[in-house]
Figure 1 (cartoon, rainbow, N blue to C red):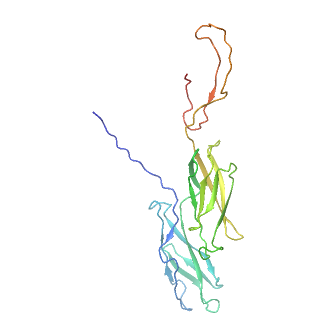
Figure 2 (cartoon, one colour):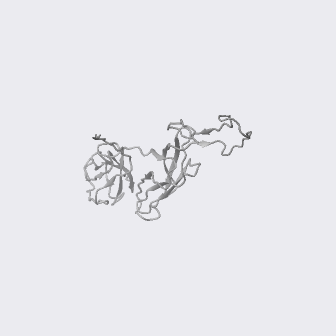
Figure 3 (cartoon, rainbow, N blue to C red):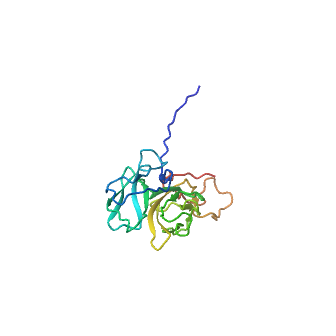
Length: 249
C-alpha cells in the first residue's frame, strides 16, 4: 500500500530579460515641414520575455536622444508607442532627425540572491542602451564596480549584446546581516551611468568545526570507566539553519 502527494511548485520570475524592439530596429519616416504637432509619425513596439502581466514585463517608452536637437520642437513617445512631436519642425534647422526611443521594464534589477559557496554562476546581466552604431568603439560599454571588498565577483562586457555580465569568481560567505551591496558603473564616454545592486547570500548548511583539532590529556593506567578526560568544543558557522548538533565517537 502506498500513497501519493501532489506538490505544486511556483517558480518566482526574476527580471533577467531586457525589452526587445520588434523588427525593424531602424525606422525611417518622411514628414512634411508644415505637419501639425501631435501627428503620429510612427509606432514602435517592444516586448519582454519575463513573466507576463508583471512589473518585469510591463514596458514604458521614452525618448533617449535627438540629433540634431530642434530648438522649436520636442519629440514625445506615448505609452502606446506612438511617436509624436510638439512645436514646429523647420527644414532649415535639420532635414534629418535621428530619434532614439528607449523601452524600459518596471522590474527591479537591484536585488538578487547567490548561494553561499557557489563559484562560476552568473546571477545578473546588466542591460544598457546606446545610440551609437553597434559594435563600434563608441558603442562598446565598459563596466566597473565598487563595494566588492572580498573580490568575489567580476563584471565583463558581452561583446555581442553590450550587456554587463556579473560572475561569481570566489566563493561567497554569508556576512552578518546576510547581504552585500555593490554599485555597478557602465561607461562608453566621459559620463558614466550606475546602478546599485543588493546581493543576498543564501546560507548553506555547513558542518560544525572544532575550535581545537588536537587535544592532549594524561591519564593514569587502569582508571575507571567514565573518568573525565577532556572537554571538546565545536561551533556551527550557519546563520539560518539549525545550529544544534551532537558529539559522536
